[in-house]
Image 1 (cartoon, rainbow, N blue to C red):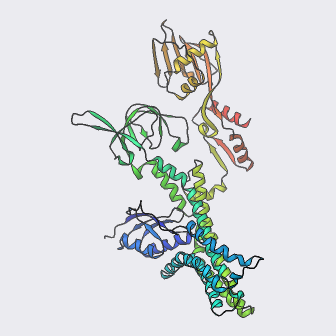
Image 2: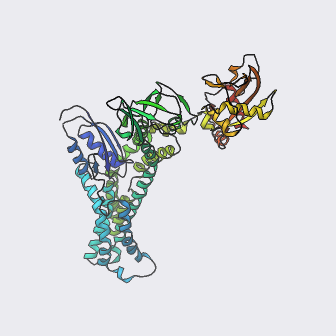
Image 3: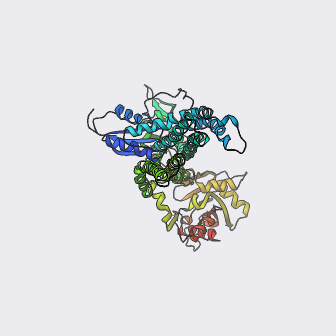
Length: 572
């Protein structure tokens, strides 16, 4: 193998805390890897292989540390995992034995538990299961010179078990039996690790939902020998850059592409949070995962798989979960020396209690074991990265994506918040708020506007036609939608009608704040306003931020008049 850099992305099972991730990082550094990123939350390991070691040798080395490497080359989808292969199964298995051992601590006397050999027999299954996981992991990490948190758990439970076994063999009595301590340590740590893994798993669900949205069916365009166009469905994972696809009204854009033919209104809320559809035409780019709200287009694929915008967003969030903000970097420095330090303190605690304070061997040993047990797992090494993962996961669930973990930690220092208007402070649902007409009655006013707007795909037109349901519409002699102007039509009597912004008005008027104006034969005969409904929680959120001395700003592509109107409605 050459010494050129080789980017590796693996899934590694068995990491339970940042110390586990630190162990793998140190091993990879020792093997000459660079650009190392290890996240115990998602079980993800990425690095660049620069040395003479092969991927197989590196994977074997990580397995020797006590972790299971998934290189992506395995095909074990149908393989059933053996019993006791996860923390929940281990906890459920150990719990009954532990509860039985704890019975002798109740006020009632259970005579059979007064026998040390019986206690040992009940404890033994729990001890074996615990040592198979914690003990094996501890031995492997010690053999590599990188002790992990499982060393503390294994030492604490092993010390209590061996001490109890010696007491049983020498028949020293109940004061020397601590089998329930061994069982309780192992059982509760299995429970704790299952809860931790479950909480981290929950935080990944929104990201997984986004990932699943990338896998959809696409209408691929091909040509036969006679150059006749053929359209057939394929999974978007089978598309390649340069392929031609047809995207119909209401369909999801299967991957990043560029429009070759057609016009469309596209909902890009997945990426922008903006619910208002965006107009797209020839040569415009479409983002994979967005929705075609109106129209049909033919497009050419520009990116697939990991190169798409949505995939890059997912990767950024995953990287953020694995990144180390300042607080976690401090935690990692402490975790690196934590295990040896705790072991040293535990030994000193035994020596000091027994020889300096003249406390009995049993009590001194239990205090020594307590030092080991209360340090498992390391709260600082675990809580900090877990908090980062949970925070980023909950944010993703609410549509907030952080580019890096540092931003999450710095978020507490914000002093200014800038809001978009449509779809953020407002619901993105347009409603008719006011209208006015001259020289015609209300029914005729509504009939003319509905008959014009029914031919438009503009969001304002859709809002009007949805709210005003008119059956007896006007049959136009000629009608068209002029981009940048509005609707222009001619009836059978030769009258021309225009509906658009104030730009269509020829004469000078002072009142230019309305949404749309209606003209008949170039004479203004009415206007209407369409407003976006303010979110019910907008005022509460802004008042809360301002109570924390955080200044709020509105940044919108809407007109200044509409922005001021929305601000006034939010405040009052």
